[in-house]
View 1 (cartoon, helix red, strand yellow):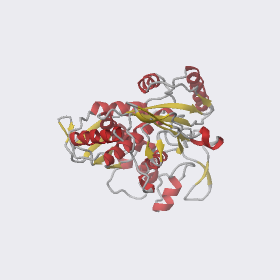
View 2 (cartoon, helix red, strand yellow):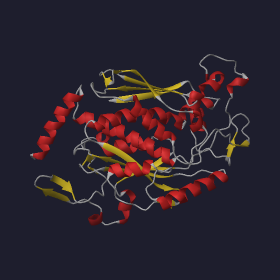
View 3 (tube, one colour):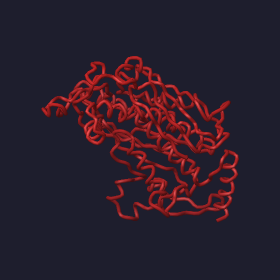
View 4 (cartoon, one colour):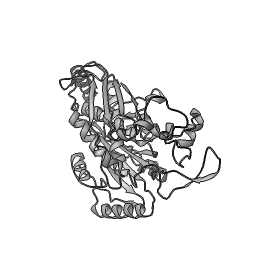
Length: 387
């Protein structure tokens, strides 16, 4: 199973094609739109969220509410395209055309300069339009399809914000449905109401100062069977694949599983999860410090992943840069930006991880139809229970 995306932040649409999704999966555009709507929420978002109301069009691979086994094509139109038709149109224009809105001052922290040098582009708009986090819109749509696949097999995905700037939440253990309900009601996707107020105040202060804030988000996947992924090759380890996927999200700079970097401070007896067995429950771990993985494979415990998002690079308190034409110092150009996108980034991370888990699930229990996969899973569960 794989997917590709195409489109620019101010182009006419964002497109994704999913290949390898089995047939007879119930696919709801409404469920996809729910995830797209969640991505647009969160305290600290910018004006773009007022312009766009993202909805998906299913234009291939789905008929009468079910997948057919053919590639699934998803389209999310950009409502702002009408203001950018001359700037972003596919038709040739004169090099000195004023409507190009050429960008020649690279912004620190973005792909602008690296991409311009790599692709030999003197108009950095050709880089920033694709490298923009707007691209995650259609990746969320893809993840929303994966979530519907996982739900078919009782697998749930939820997330929460753990930190914004220097404000950290008090941790509480909650059932995954309760966690989802409470965080969905919070503008910064936290359970801790005291931290919520402090985070909102910190975002307001950063906005007033023309600055931005990053943070840490956590995603939990529950109901995953033991044995997804593999130890036999480096690129088949599922925790490694999830780590790559998380840091592929724009502005994400780090990832950890379970107790993560905390393990460096502890002795081994405080890090590893003891193995238990009871009649009727089979094998399980006494704890889940490993975050659901051992040897690159799922243990059957919940997957627990945290990602670090840096503060957004585009500041209204603009940073110093160099004009690629004159080579003179200049203040970096400002495109539309958020003050804090950490709550929205958590939604993106949920859906990115949902795809990776669904991909590994289909590798393990592969079949061309949902019915075939259910049969394969039932056989495997019987094998595990009788081990």
